[in-house]
Image 1 (tube, one colour):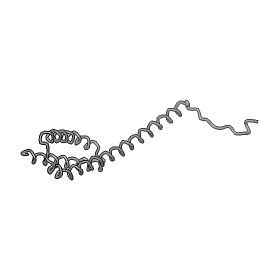
Image 2 (image 1 turned 45 degrees about the vertical axis):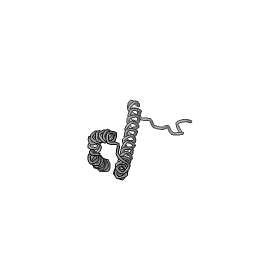
Image 3 (image 1 turned 135 degrees about the vertical axis):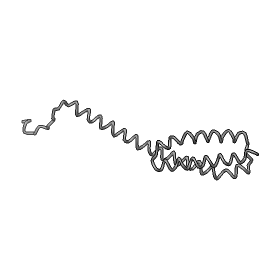
Image 4 (image 1 turned 60 degrees about the vertical axis):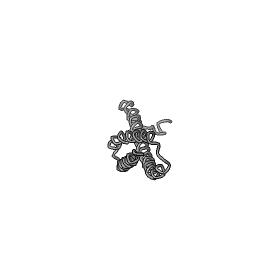
Amino acid sequence: MSNAPQLYTLYQQLLNQSQVMLRLARQGLWDELIACETDYVNAVHSLAQLTEEIQPSSQMQEQLRPTLREILDNESQVKTLLQNRMDELAKLVGQNSMQKTVLSTYSNQGGHVLVPQSNLDLN
């Protein structure tokens, strides 16, 4: 159990990193969020390895459970914000694609202006 304090410390660091990532996502600082993600993934990996080595007791697991819940809640909120951003970007890409199609269609008209004929011309 000599590594128990290290396990608590890693969980707290992971919680802090998840809080930073959530703040960045809420502020729309996507580049900064992506930069933090590498550190976060490395922390999760370190925590997983240490957890395998230590085999935490049920008492330790119970003590860590609220921290883990908060970490998972933060991850869920970040995921939702990222999905919203992806939807927003997809919409912008779709609009851009439609604008290009319209522009291409009108530019293919070769400068011809199409004017409807009046019914009088048909007689």
